[in-house]
Length: 84
Image 1 (cartoon, rainbow, N blue to C red):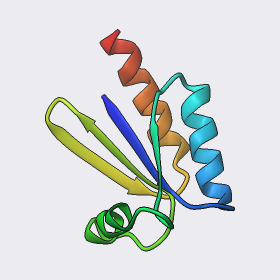
Image 2: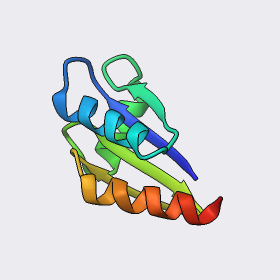
Image 3: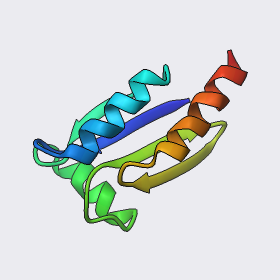
Image 4: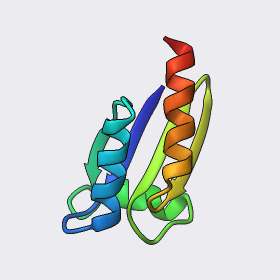
């Protein structure tokens, strides 16, 4: 499972998301959309205009959402535990 958090500086929801992912043992990559134009465009192409945008790639499928979603992160943690 590959998790990418499209984030920006001084974003409380971004910080909560990254912290919650780490606390649930989920590894992730961080991409700053204020610096990476391609990442910003990817968020827009997915239909999002606010950060964070979480993109999860697993088993050939891609799931994504915007904002701090603890329920989704908990589900990822459970899924990651099953895969180990």
